[in-house]
Image 1 (spheres, rainbow, N blue to C red):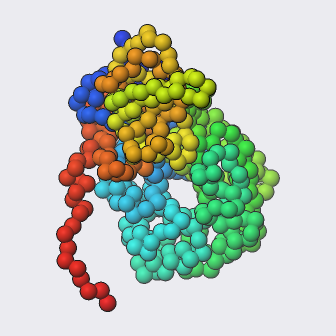
Image 2: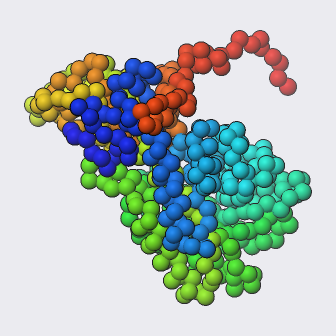
Image 3: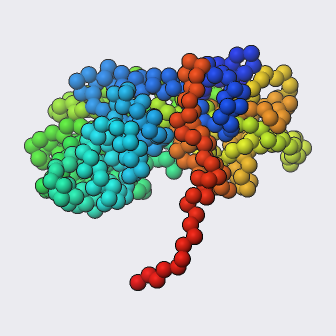
Length: 450
């Protein structure tokens, strides 16, 4: 076990054996705010916003579109304000995510609305507030958005989500651009072209361009290259048929980040440079103008900025079949605030956060407190043999999908989220209370339903 700068946030360091994040000691944070605790390195988060924005603008110049922060990775009112202050857009995929953005006074024109099954009320609300783009995901949605835009007396700018038939090398559950998937319009089946023609026949939709997202936590460029190539081919077909060119291509996100030793977070400038070279050459090949290029990083911004602090509650040793031993280290959280190991087999790193140790390393498994044998945070890692109840463990790179996918399983309370910077800390999402859990329970007399 060792401190790995590449998986911790930018302003994390070990001082006198203790993990310090944004100038705040882990032990002091745990004492003040309790555990489990999500700790966001605020300066790192804001730096990553600018990193992706600058990379897009540097490499695409006048053709740079919008960086849309994928709010599904993690969103709160305060984070939405950081996004707005950073000058980038935001991508929402439910009415709840839209409500958070609007509560933060986020500029509606810089909001992009996603989702494979948007309700009519969600669509109507998006049109009403004037969102910049709605990404259409099905044939039925073409009719819905057009009809609701007509009711509102507006022409709604839209993108079509395209399925380019790309098998991204990632977990099946987060691969989103192959044929057998719930998202988008398939190029291979001809549905994508049918959708394009259908939108062009409407009176209250303006087709601005095409969208594609091939998956999440991707480390190789092959999938991005193939998807981009196919989208540009489809754009050329659109030009030939309708004698006009689409103004935008949204190439999604999915850029991988480091979770464990040996992994490296994608460098925004390198990614955008390679993408710009590809887009330029493909547009030249098809005699197209280079459209505005937009992207949707979420995990790549939020993921590396956050560390989860846990307190150790119990430890026990078990005998394995090969006569070896494993130390089980149980912490005060688990699958309710980090479901990814159980859901995707995701791997994480951890270190002893509150002190240094010279004890021998022992084969360990970090588990939660839920009534599930699959409640495992880290399946196998070498940790100091003297870790004991009361010690703190820090799990880095939990900014994406930790708090966002958190649940109340076993009626656990969702952890607080705090932002740290320059030795100061503040709560941006408070810890749930038992009163919050009980507030939804009602005592209601039976009613006759006809």
